Length: 399
Ligand SMILES: Cc1ncc(COP(=O)(O)O)c(C=O)c1O
Image (cartoon, rainbow, N blue to C red; front, top):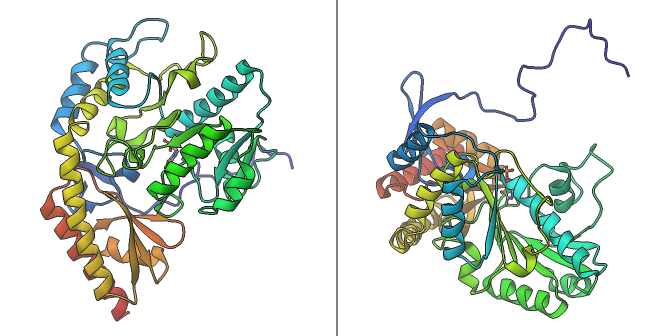
């Protein structure tokens, strides 16, 4: 069908790819957002695990505005001091020997896939397949949707990029059968976010690392959502005592400013030489100045211990909520402040009821309601969130 330019335009000014709630927030402070009429909302979504230090954190505002007063953008044709400092900080704090900065998780996924392919190409080995898992979410680029497997994200966007084999979640036999010497890498979220807060148990992550070592496959972890302190460690895989070869980072690392990174061990990254990859904005001074401040705050062991402590208490409260409302909630899952409430009724109903209490939550697959508060949320705000969830559940029960 040809498009007739004389036809009246029906499409909204913003391409309608999101089902947006009719809410407009004009400002934020800590874990609270404010509408123009002054009404305050308690934010347990934090921009889907992105505003890791809440809204308008004074130290992040200062880091951004201070950098904005110096220089906004420098091409990667030159040295960028905040980028160098952030790379060194990340290398010091993690398994990685090197970092490439991106603007989003999707871009991190793209580079991770390219890095894996280049690694095997340089070694002269034909390893066409990257293993991924059902329920995964790695972003919306053509590579990232192919990696997550066929479904609503890929429909209509074929032909899909080849080179991925999608395995069932938690099926060890399927993994053993698939992980042979044709496999270039295994790519996995230690805790699936969009997939419904599904954690890979530590022993499975360990087993996966060992299996990758046996065949030489690279282990690529997607810590875009579960990383940057969300589980009470800087990165979620640390709980399992393993290290990946490549890791995708985004969301929390910029505290709300668009910033991502691929961190890699030298052996995996060595093929990425001059001209093999690039990005105009990746590693720009503004993002990296903010990222440095986020790392300074979130990377502090005392801050991470506090995340775990608060998360433990919050989880207890959530378990109490489940016990009090068995017709609404079935259980709690997740780790640290990456939590999911398993819902008996459709999660959209609970989300709406929570919105009736001016509480923001995030839906996930499998009728799970995600609770991803800012990592520095105050204890009183977590208690308030429990009260509001309790009220929302009571409303649903009375309906
Ligand atoms: C685990 C994971 N990977 C990748 C992405 C894509 O990140 P972005 O939306 O920044 O492109 C997301 C976003 O939700 C994610 O949760």
